[in-house]
Picture (tube, rainbow, N blue to C red):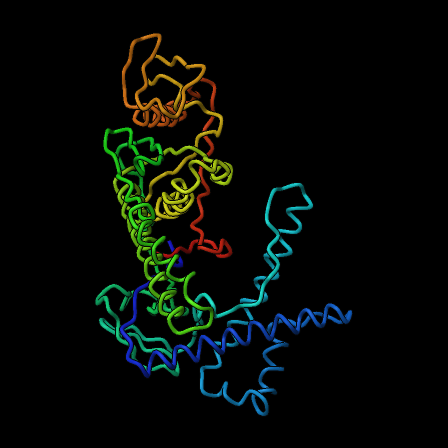
Length: 405
């Protein structure tokens, strides 16, 4: 099985290399904004909208006069930025078509990029070589890696490298094409997984995956740093320093959450032959202002995205229960369904068979019974299971069989 996979790790740069990366990010940002302005001007004038190739030709002409500073960076940085702009318009028109069809989607017209919230990123292609402790990039040379032995040195074809900055730290994400052995049928257990806020996930075999509560544990510090930023004068050096500290705190919380999600999904995909989850409406759940922050802190949709593509890698079949399946209200022992069950009731007590069980574990057992009943050729309680998408998708959803890890 041929897949596209991305490996992201942090760079260990000196001051000269940091300045070079900042120039590349600035060139990519300028090209994107310039291309967006040209597209808008052409549309308002009733002319044909230029493509990325047309814009790149115009940019090459401007390099000889107005934009001579662009010769200091790799030609890939502005070129790939213009391609990203084309893709942004493709997605915009796709969402417009979906909205006309009656779907509830945000249209999201492409916007101009600013370095107010970071220097951004740039993508490079061509001669990219990976070593155990460094990576060789066009025009940037050999850049050291903080994590040794993580990027694939052999057995993978390097397609591109994206260098990005966040909270003063530089990262490189390498997209490679690699071959994985075709997943074969295994005799590993089948489980149901109930996602929640108190616990990240409760598995029907009795194990639980704890929620790190990355935002909640750092919220006091983040609020204090946010107050410090708001008290500093706009445009001052002290405000920039305070904003940098705030960005580091947010990055720490996001990194803790991401690490917990990757460990949980990898463990399930590697050790289970089939997993059933609830088809949660996360957007609708976030409308509950009492729980919105806690729900967002879990990363429910990211859990779903990761388990789908990792399941395809390791031969774990991922299925999703119908959104209206009463996994929480149903008794996993006798099948009795309660009329109501509030969020405050953390223990399930069956009125028919006197079963007393943890609420989340009971829901996970019901989800497991769904797939076992489906395998036997029948549906439990008349409810169906909808299989997950078998293809591996990237963070943008544009390329099949790709993912970021």
